Amino acid sequence: MIEQNFIKLFEHSFKENWDYPIYTNYYKNQTFKYSEAATQIAKLHLLFENAKVEQGDKIALIGRNTPNWTITYVAVVTYGAVIVPILQDFNPNDVHHIVNHSESTMLFCSDKVWDTLEEEKMDKLIAVFSLNDFRCIHQKDGEYIQKIMNLLTDNFNKLYPQGYKQEHVKYAERDNAELAMISYTSGTTGFSKGVMISGNALAGNITFGIRTHLLEKGDKVLAFLPLAHAYGMAFDFLTATCVGSHTYLLNKIPSPKVLMKAFEEIKPKVIFTVPLIMEKIYRKQLQPALNKMSMRLALSIPLLDDKIYQQINKKLNEAFGNEFREVVIGGAPLNKEVEDFLRKIGFKFTVGYGMTECAPLICYSPHDKFIPYSASKILDIMEIMIDSEDPYNIVGEICVRGENVMSGYYKNVEATKNIFKEDGWMRTGDMGTIDKEGNLFIKGRCKSMILGASGQNIYPEEIEEKLNNLPFVMESLVIEKDGKLFGLVYPDYEAVDASNISHSDLNIIMEENRKQLNNMVANYENISKIILYPNEFDKTPKRSIKRYLYTNLNI
Image 1: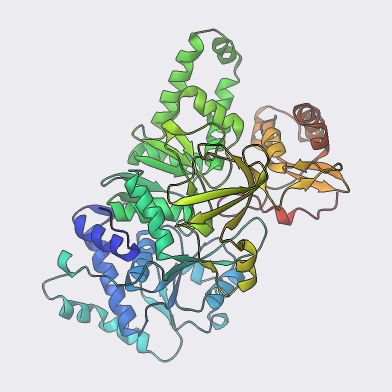
Image 2: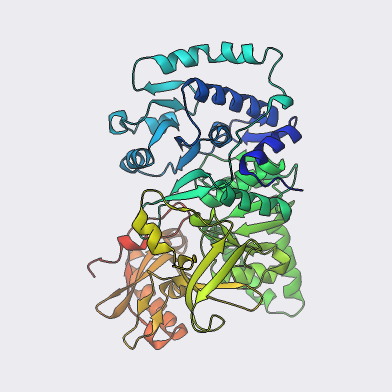
C-alpha cells in the first residue's frame, strides 16, 4: 500500500532508496545519493531546531533548479514548516512582497538572486542562507545564527557519532490537512496570490503518479521546467523523489539545442514539458524538412508516406533519448497542427490539465488512451463540472473539487470567496466542455473571452492557434478594440532572414496571412488588421502570454 501522508512519503522513500542516486546537477556533473541528501536534510533540521523554528513557520526559497534547492525544499516540509517557493524570474520588488506577505522567517536563495535584493525591505527575516553552499549571508539581530552555523557540524557529529544512517530518518508528525506550501502565482491576469496548498493536495498528486506508474523506482528524469512552478515541482521533483527516481537538474534556459543534448545523454523515462518547447521543435527542426519540395512529393504517394512518417517518428524518438515511455505536455493548450502531426507519426505523447490551485493535476490520460484535442480525463480523486445548461455541447466555466484542491488564498478572504462557489466547487477560470467518458475539452480563459457584436462568444486563443501556423508568425495575440478584432504578431525573424525576405515586405505578407486566416474562422471572428509587434510577448513561467499587459494598447 502506498503511504498517504505527505511527509511520511519522503521518510519512506529515503529509507527504501538509501544507496540510489537522487539528484544530479547536470552541468556540474555532481550527483547526490538518497543517503547524502538525507544527511544534509538532517543538518538543516538541526539548524531549524537550534534557531527555534517551529512547525507551521514559513521559509522562503528562490533560485535555479539545483540539488541544494531540492534538498532545502524537502528539509523544510519534513521538519513541519511551510515552504514558500518563489520563481527566480520574479523581479526584486515581487520577491520582497512575497517574503513579507507570507511572513517568512528565513530565506534560502542563490547568491545571484541575493545580489538583487534589499534586506531592509524584508524585516521579518531572521536569517538568509546561500543556496550555493548553505552559509549564512544575512542575519537580523546579533550573531546567534552564525554561532549556530559555526557549531552545526560538531553538534551534528555528536548526535550521530557513528554517522547518519537509515534508521535515523524520522520526520515530523503532521496531519495532511495542515498547510504545507504557499505558492505565489504569476498569472495572465497580473495578480499574484498566495495559493495555500495542504499536505493532502501534494500527496494527492504524488500518490497518483506512483499509483499509475507515471514514474517508477530507478527512472531517470530531466527537470528543465522551473521547480518553483507547480507542474515541474509535482512530477520532476516531488513524485520522482518519493518513488525512488533519479532527477537530473538542468539549471539553464531550456532551448531545443540544450535539451536535445541533455536528452541524448540522460535518456529520461518520462518527459514533462510545455507546448512551447514541442512547438519550437516542430517549427524549427521538423517543419523546414517537411516543406521541401522533394519531401512534399514523397508524402503525397500512398504507402510511401507511412514509411516516411515512421522514419520521422524514429528520429524524433532518438532526439528525446529513445527510452521514454511517453511525453506529458501541460501548462497551456497544444497547437492543433502540432498535435495532428505528432499523432500522425505515432509519437507517444499525452496532454494533461492542471493549475497551481490544484498542486497542479486535474486531468491526465496515458498516451495510449489520450483522446485527440482533449485535455485528458478527470482524475479518480477529482470531480469536474461544466457550468453550462448542456456541458457536452455548450461551453461553460470548468469547476473542480476533490483531493488536490487548495485551501484558499493566503490572507485574501475576498479572492478565496470569489473562486469558490457556495456548494464548494472551485472556479478554474477556464471555459470548456466535457464528454460522457470524462474527457475535458478546453476552449479558452473566461477573462480572455471576447463578446461579439451580436453576443457571440469569441475565444482569442482559438484564433491565435490558427494565426500562429501561418508563414513567418512566431507568436500572436488577438485583442478587441472599439468592436473590432486586431492581431498583434511577433514575426519569426530568423525564418524571414533565412528566406531572404526584406523586413519591409512583412506587412504585405501579414496582410495575406490576415486574408487566409479570415477564410478559416467565422465572420464574427474576422481580424480587421494585423499589427507587427517588435518584441516577444511577456510570459508567465509556464509560458502563457500575460494578456493583461496588451489589452489597452493604442492601435
